[in-house]
Length: 159
Image (cartoon, rainbow, N blue to C red; front, side, top):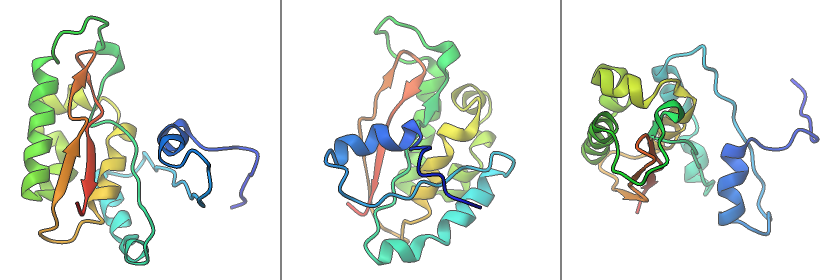
């Protein structure tokens, strides 16, 4: 495979990094997601990246825990019940380090199906969580649902 320096980064990378590193003074490697593979495959692949973290490499996964643009509404009302239920189930699994629930999120039923209509926004979470050591704390911030159907909850591993 050849690199293409003209292609640039996907918005999932540059939209986050421009705020973290506005001078663009760090090397960045962006991974692609193979949407033909199940979530377990992504989590297992991400585990193989753990040595990078040990070397001081920052692993960032950008997406949304709840991402259903078709259901989004403009009014500032609270999230849909299914969005709240799914976000809360994910937050509980994060706190308990329940990777099985996080990897097999579709087992959470209709709330999962509505919250994750396609996996490309959820899977980056698994890449970050696969770096987590047993018992290592996580911190949640920006843990709100906007537009009824978007949760841009941020998860920091190793607070």
